[in-house]
Length: 257
Length: 296
Image (cartoon, rainbow over all chains, first blue to last red; front, top):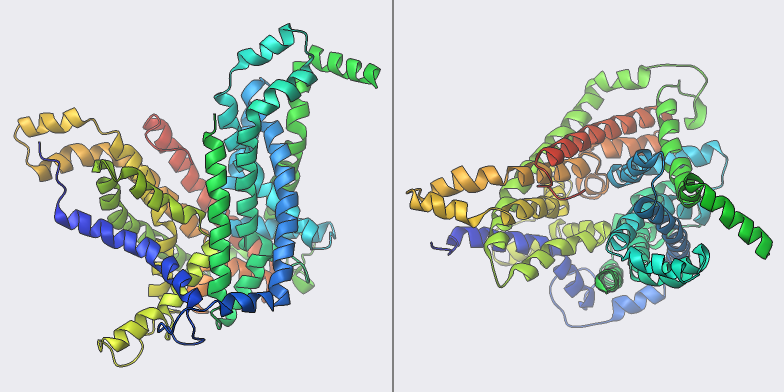
């Protein structure tokens, strides 16, 4: 049987890959272009990256993003790991309800999540700022942490924990000395995923951020709206690079033995 | 405090339910308080009369939902539907051949798959800006077409339905390719060989064996594109301008400049209901094909 593919199929595939990757590639290349308005190549420069350092709003945005990302990552990693332990190891009433709860954040459109949280915070008269952004990010990150950690738990050997208990370790010692070390790659991988999503989020953050609490994506959105400098290309390139590294690490950890 | 610790452990031991709930409580509370309750508040808001400064007044009304029969808003709903369906159809026609090529390739498969997954991890905002960079009047496409002498003045691409559609397809195409690939990869090769032995030509083999067997992937992919397209906001916001509004933009607008929160909540609830309906459909298809479609 012939396995050769028709030429037109390969051509269509080529065009689609072109379409999927060319825009970002062009964006990155032109972050090094020595011209403010032109899209002609005028030589290599790093000036757009230097410009970024002169903009206090970008540095403030980066700081806000790191604070929110760090806090949201730690909280969602802890809460998500506990939930995954319950789902992976315990039988309890309300299990189906919890599973449903975990699905909802994954399928809810970001805009719906954003405005519903805004309504809650306004109703509670909770001032919008870094705290509300963090709360929102945890709410949409938990489910993804649970999925990653649960996958790890399901691949784990329960006998080791039983062995520890038989050898006289109590439940808490077993948890810290046996369960956690085995789970660690899954937890770290889930945490990196959470950080990436928090660092990337624009839509939800735009509703629950207040004056003076703009994260990096909010600042970038403002720049895109004004649509001027190649600095946007530079900051985009940095964001792409940072995300790529985080995802690579998360993937490596998820596959770790 | 060893005594406390002993007692707590003993208590947890005798009550397995309590142990599970101790694990569930913190995360469960967070999801309940910061996801479910807000959605409920949104629903309640959408059913209350509008107050001053974006707030609500006590009472019950369906007027915000009734407003969607106003031609202006009906048009937004229709446009959202038409574009989401259009995006799904285009993604299907572009994505199926790609999934097919990946499933049939040997040496390049991992690399080709990696390239499909890569956009998932690229900031959506950055990707949308990349489209602007290409399509604006002074963008790369126009500058090259001008240089090649194919046009005399820049084509207006940005802020047109074309730009939004290109952005939607660009954003969601990987969601179509992966599930179709997953079901094509599982097609039993001996079935195709049997069809060949029985005299079926390549076109017939595809139409009568491969295509029916990949239906679960096609349905899953279509829903996975349709769902986020329906609730999308950034694409129409940045590529469509003021005229090409989708329902996500309508919601955002009610919460920013228009300051009609109950109406915005109603619009948002409609999006949510449509999405949930699509998810139900997805889960039913997934159950019926016995794991043929990948998990959400």
